[in-house]
Length: 462
Image (cartoon, helix red, strand yellow):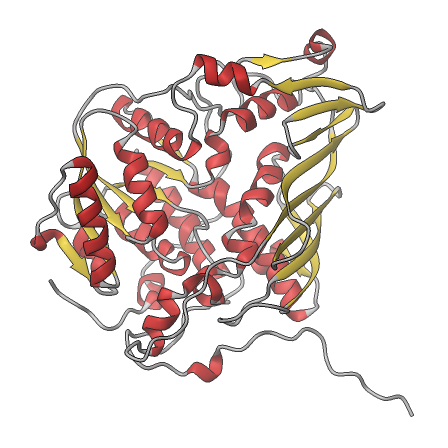
């Protein structure tokens, strides 16, 4: 097992051909999902926002079709990587995992033990790779597909290497933390599509039947033209890792990655991207500008904020308000609301569409889903869809779409950090790179990891 102590993302970026944003993702078959609808005829008669067949809808079957056996490598063996590994194995027959990689040996061994216990899969020591370069060894080990679930900063480079090697990729969200990573993702996504590869991202709402059916209703014109929205992810504080005596600077930060902005992108990027993505997905719009603010109040480790509030002006002039917070003892809300010219859609409690008078005209039928489908977990369904695309030879590429929501979240973060307005035009070509210049597994310059303070100090007027 080789352990490499340094990694330069910039060396990869210099050799990458940076491409412009990709076009819309292709269309697919429509999932059969049961719904309940009061006033359904009126909703069906509305003028559609998009004609059926012009937008992608996944076929959310319970289990992927049989086909070629697929060997997967897992890059990043922590909680989400381990979860994704078992979601993958539950999605179809003829699947196995043959290689694991992580920065730390204990993470690799922990997932290997779980795979043996739950699925009787043996990962030999020769296929357990450790270090900052472990992703290369996993990808080069003979796998067909890769599950990329490292701390988010590393995902653009891992995606690029997997694509160069012709591997299908599952990328956990977020897929980048800064504009440099965004540009690499977009360029690599274009290369993946040219190679007929299948790329699915971990924005699992795209594979959650309630969201997919809501999307279809809105595309069919149920709320009319979209005029704005509000998205929330307000919850209690997330986990953290107190530094242990034998941990180096870098090891501590990577083990505590969700609290460090260079690794996670801050929680507006790492977590709230889900909600922002719902609006960019449903509206088909990207933000033209953002003005936001945030603060650090309660976080115990790291250098990022624990609250954000952002006003996005979308490219057609409508507004999206984004709010996220991770503080104990505050009101929680994880939901989305979209307003249209004829009504509104909300996920607060249930997926419901109302007319302008507040009457419920459509509601997603959760009980019908349970009765008609065996698999209701969107984390597994995204792997079902991925495998079906791979086995059917029908390429899919979700990275460029996810990158739009990702960049929106980055815009909001940078506005809050600086107090300035950010724009899509400026941020999408920015050379902002959060990767430490002295990145290595040992000692680093910790003085550079400070919480941002927006604006400037008060100046007393004479």
